[in-house]
Length: 120
Image (tube, rainbow, N blue to C red; front, side, top):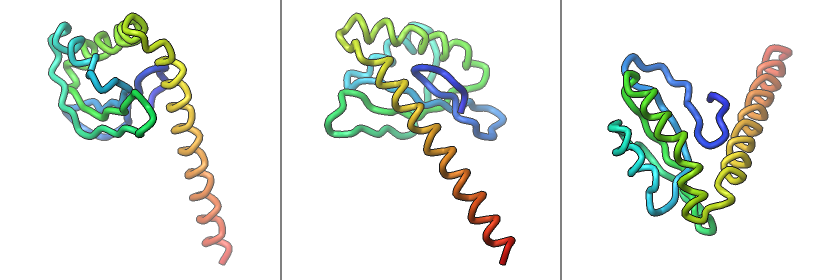
């Protein structure tokens, strides 16, 4: 995953698509931005926790549309702030840092298991 404060690029091998994850609300505020920037987004999955106003949305866009998609997402934090979601950037930062921490822990666990397997 690439480092961004409010959305993440997901490293996945594909000739035609770029994959992303971002946070949105149940009103799907990003959709209006995608329409404004004339970018077609293919939504894959979404996850929401009961106590959170935000949902994580996984999607992909054509590689040729990646710049327009990212331009649309660059406007999302301002839109969230205007509509009263003042904690949006904090929630995004906490979520992505937790994801990166878990990814590192899983990598360390795999290395430990591999070294134990090699020792036997």
